[in-house]
Amino acid sequence: MKHLLIALVLLLSQLLSVADAYAGDACVEQHVAPHKVAAAAQTALLAVAALDKADAPVALIARVGTDLSKHGLVYSHAGFAVRDHAHGRWTVVHLLNECGSDRSSLYAQGLVNFFSDDLVNQDLRIVWFKPDVAKRLAERIKQMPRHSLHHPRYNLIARPGSRDYQNSTAWIVETMASALAGHDFYDRATAYTFARSDGFVPDIIHIPYSKRVLGGLFSANTVFTDHPVATRLSGDYPVVTVRSIFHYLDKAGYIERQREWRDGELQVRIGPA
Image (cartoon, rainbow, N blue to C red; front, side, top):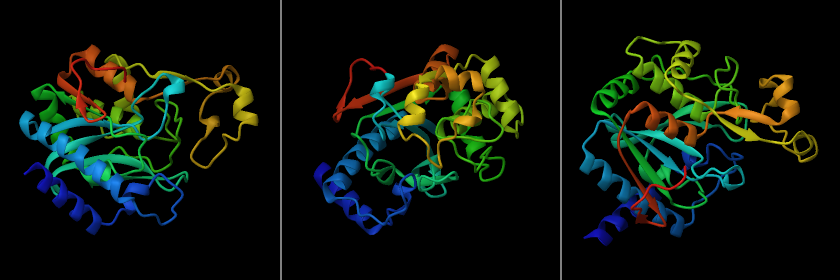
């Protein structure tokens, strides 16, 4: 029965457009290799089984899209897995960079597409919120696209709290804060201010000045001038990462439970984020 489900998911995935899966790449038409779609389908089945068993309206789901191990990080991207969304039973709502440009959009994707984005591997972590937090967050997400707190100007290393740029993880923190505060926070600055007062602390990512200048790190979706001169000279950039989001939720006591799969195997202990 399990193999039949995988086959059905694979067939459906091949019939769906995969354009969304490459929203962060160079906008060249590409086809996902069948074995990668099969791997994504297997991960999606693991996620669906866990999400159905938990029976919560929303959860935070993370993937490994980029190798960030040199920065001590594992998960590079996350989104909200929403139950009974207008686009499907379990739909991931997340922010994606458009084709390596300086723009972004919000996407609502099925789980197979979410894990088909030419990922480093199929490792997965799901974090479930405390029931009251999950209820408020689900209600907030279902208001979208109204009050989405989305800023279309994208910066991969966006300064936390920046009014001019946003990246996918900053959007997650601001969206969570707008729900956690219990108030109608419809502007990003107020939401992020609440997150900081509530205990959120961004990560520090070190990018040496020499590497930035000589290493070809300039691109449309990476804006160093979003940070003050002192930061650029030191090379220590505060950035919202998936790890910093997990730490915030754990420290603030907002996590009900979490599960992690490495190489398709459920971990007894949750590993580094």
